[in-house]
Amino acid sequence: MSDFYKTLKGVSQGIYKEKMSKFIAFAEPVSSAEDAKGVVKTYQNKYHDARHVCWAYMIGTARNEYLSSDNGEPSGTAGKPILGQINSFGLTNVVIVVIRYFGGIKLGTSGLIGAYREAARLAIEAGEILECHEQAQFTFQFPYLAMNAVMSLLKKTDTRIVEQQFDNVCRMTVECDADAMPALQSRLSDIDGVTAAQ
Image (cartoon, rainbow, N blue to C red; front, side, top):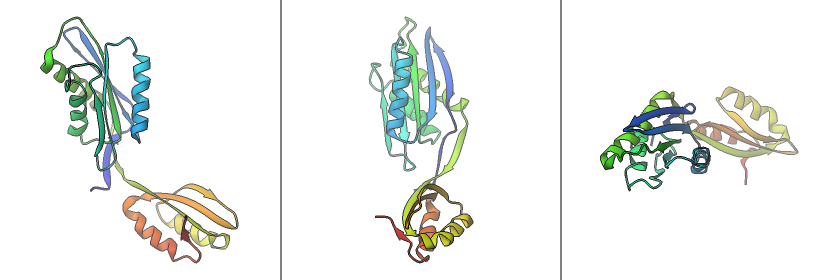
């Protein structure tokens, strides 16, 4: 499994027209299936007058969490081609929603597949693809006296503090590149009193 993955930097849009039908595609970065479903709901509410709001998403660096919906189109003619474009570009942590306004002329199975695929492709190409490094988090605790040693180590590494609580026993959650985490954990455990949080 790679520690790198590709996703989109922000929201992008593509519009495709075929035989009077209009396909408006939106591609957005998301961090979870819940996020993706929330995005879908937003577009369903915003374009409630559209005939179909079809979508697909892919989550995780392993790219093994995904779902798609034809939303009333013939089975396999909308969600699958949208997901196919996410796969073609090797993206993850992304959702694509394609809104269809029916133009009165039926497109047939192959026409629908082509239209949804093309709309999704245009939305992806309109955006900026980012290569990201998979992140990992670690929560640990340490006595207040070890504060200087902990902070000094974190300053020397490419680590982001996500959460911190300072008391007699301090608690901290840090985030860094996943492949750098074992070394960071090892160096932290060399500091007196540092233990993984329960």
